[in-house]
Length: 422
Image 1 (tube, rainbow, N blue to C red):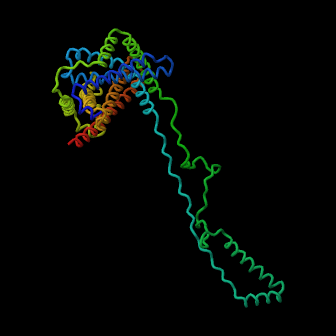
Image 2 (cartoon, rainbow, N blue to C red):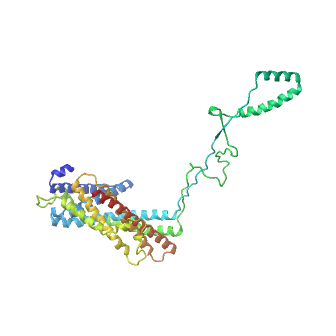
């Protein structure tokens, strides 16, 4: 595909990309209409809505970046409608993801971490002990001892018994299990052979290394539980309204007009008569606008983790964090325009990994910022308990720290990209 783009003119390459995205739009719309009302059909409907938003974003971004090559009147009439459709379809998913994010954070903040199991006691080491050497008497001495024992009778029998006891002691040593080279595996003096036994383990016994750690479980605290119920009530209501708005949008004449225009786009792209046009200067302009917007970001502060910049004006009465997040959200939009422009120019070439990582960091930045705003909005609910307000305040600070972590991740990805580019 990349080789074909080098052979095709700018208008042909742009037409191929727009027609592909328009075809994806129409295919996703058909799948959304054909989805059933059961659980599997609901999943298919959500997947079709995501694909519909994806195609709408790419068509709208391409119309914005390469508008000098397209019919201006047609472009300016379709682009805002695609933005309206993409935003309408994204609200329901955004509310559901926001609720899941906040509830997960509440459980994480309310549940203590599992205790680290102590290291098991080292097992006793077997120390090899050499066997004592027992001297063997000469044959003449053995014969003399036998003769004396025969003549002495009971007295010699007592002596023989004593020597037999001594020999028995030597035999006891000699009967111990021996290892290789005649070394006996014995426990060193002053130690005991301790073996793990569940029956002998007392209340203070250390757990085994293979025993699974118990996961903390249990209900949330009173304030966190009430905060979770409040957030679930508010965000579920907002999600229900967004779902109703999406259904109304699918049945409106405005949506049908957008679908008709996209259907026309799938068959014919309204291009200007510009035989000497080129896609690369327009894509380079999108990259320049992105770099210019990134230059206004405080990347020096974002390069330090836990610099608490995202918590500035956290107690202000106005919406100061929104103004603080606005430059980052602008960079997110420009980064998408740059990535989609690269898709048009490069064709099927794999996207730059660093741009993908930077985009993921900015997506997390937006999600965390909107979650923090939702927690702050819930905390402004009148007549809530102090414990509930406290839990929502902790949740808001946690999400603002997530905003700061996302800025740190973007800073690292963007600087690696700049070094590689140079």
